[in-house]
Image 1 (spheres, rainbow, N blue to C red):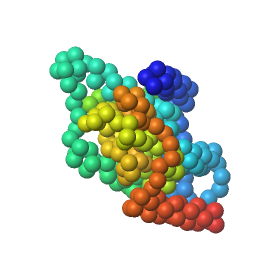
Image 2 (cartoon, rainbow, N blue to C red):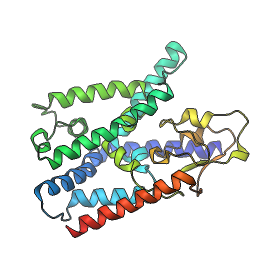
Image 3 (cartoon, rainbow, N blue to C red):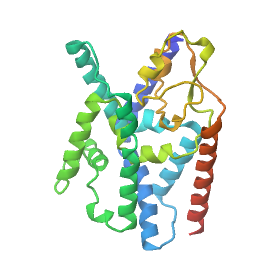
Amino acid sequence: MKPKHSVNSIARVAVQIVFFVFFPAAFSVAFSGIRYVAEQIQRHEGISWNPFLFALVGLLAFTCVFGRFFCGYACAFGSLGDWLFAGSAFVQRRLRKKVFRLPDKVIAALLYVKYAVLAAIVVACVAGVYASVSGADPWGVFALIRAGNFSLAGREWAVAALGVIAVGMLFVERFFCMFLCPMGAVFDLLPMLPATTFNRVPEKCAKGCSLCTRACPAALSLGEGYGRHGECFQCGKCAAKCPTGSMRIGLRRLKGTEAWLTAAKAAVLFALCYKAIGM
């Protein structure tokens, strides 16, 4: 199992590099679809297909079926966070023998911030004021810098926000993805199929071992039926750390509240799609 996990880790880094070099604006393109829909609602105009909407719908459909592979493999902003944290963790281990980690209660509280960010952006779009601050988002500035465009006049606040996020990435793994990413909030609201998330086979686990949970950048508790599977970045770090090979991607049963919540998400998504098509 270990060689397989090593190959998977190498393959993931290779895919991240490809997307970082050749498709640095993938995040901005997908999120532009969200902005487009909200702005069309504000204008009371119909929604028509365009490249941004195609990218958004394709990404949402892929995520519903396969999980958040975009976040774990293709998002250049997420990859930047992985690399900054990896470098910082290496230095921290050298200097203090221990990598800083936020308490679980703090992580649980901060997870809701990204929904507030998404709501604020959508409200701003619907109110017709988001266009006045166009280009002031940190991921847009990141895409410009990555593309070699350093004409950042008028974007000073976005540059400052990007700097703050970069500092957060140094000390908290997947800082932006977990706490601030509006697309991450959208993904977590999607009804994902129960065959696309990492699962633990309890009978194969070593007694008292929690390496998978400690390795998870989303701070997920990876037991049977955990309720935050929409936060999984599909990075595979839990499987790579597992000494017994008990972590796998495969079908699992949805139980109780999780089953009802997934069904509710599916119903809401269907209603929104029906409404959008009918506009």
